[in-house]
Length: 398
Ligand code: REX
Image 1 (tube, helix red, strand yellow):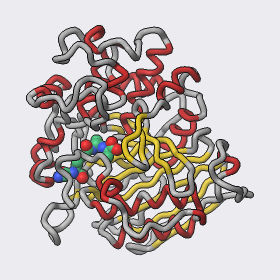
Image 2 (cartoon, rainbow, N blue to C red; image 1 turned 45 degrees about the vertical axis):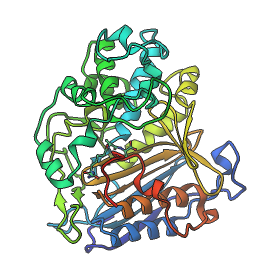
Image 3 (cartoon, protein in one colour; image 1 turned 135 degrees about the vertical axis):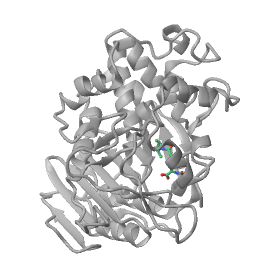
């Protein structure tokens, strides 16, 4: 991970005595061994497809494996390193959900109570419950669809803006709801704006204070920050480069922004190590009671390979292994952060671009390399649903 020429590839491993036994087993002890060479190949492909840099870190029963390709900064040519901080986008949603689950453990919140009970009059339908909000089943329209119809102009329009939660919610409420409460899964950032409002109402503190006191500090996540509305990522970090809609147009350095358009739905900054620590702690049962974790892991199927719990995704991989975590897409950064059911193997992968469906689809391969190893089935083509994820469904270009 020393300074390397642009687009160079680095592979590191401290993996020890991993067992290669059949998949499908509940414990990560029996997962196939990670395939670090394949992991590096996936990252190289992402860079060939337009990401200035791509990296991944696997934490596995105390051992670490990693790979990096490309640069952290196109101007200086500094090589990307797995210690570089970056914007994690919607992986923030898992942090927000954890805070609310802890508040539920403390008896301050009932998952099946209506949002109206805690925030009277906020939402137009008093039947919408906290559980529906955290599972994207409220039917609240995603206000961010309207912001990013045109990718670069949309970004520049919000880049330095500071929104209140209320303003973001109003952007949603101008539209009809997408479904009746609880009737269907429909990904919407609005749900996690409501989650942020609930955190502030029930705790009496900002989401920043709650993230810090409940998660960042206890887990010693020293690379993890919630800075809103500050625009600069502190310390050593990767620059993020947004892909314009116009083919061939130069990438836009999108690193500095308020991320006020996302806040509790997407504004946290972190590192590969910290996200692996976070997911291991979460899935290992160290952040809430086991009863509450079971609620968070109760999944509703999204499609043939994905399901959604409460601020938590499940991905079903080609070797039959299921992993839990979240994806993130904020301008300039695509993140995959997932762990085995017991939390003992975790992977965080980053590509330093966004609005590039090919790169997003390719990076899914990091999960296959990390959890299926050589048993991963090579896909002939990445299905559209994988390429587009749930990234502002109406607006992502092909
Ligand atoms: C914003 C699109 C996408 C930005 C979005 N991101 O809603 C949330 C997120 C915070 O991380 N979602 C992930 C832009 C996928 C999740 O929940 O798993 N796209 C970009 C456009 C398209 O502007 N016109 O790709 O950077």
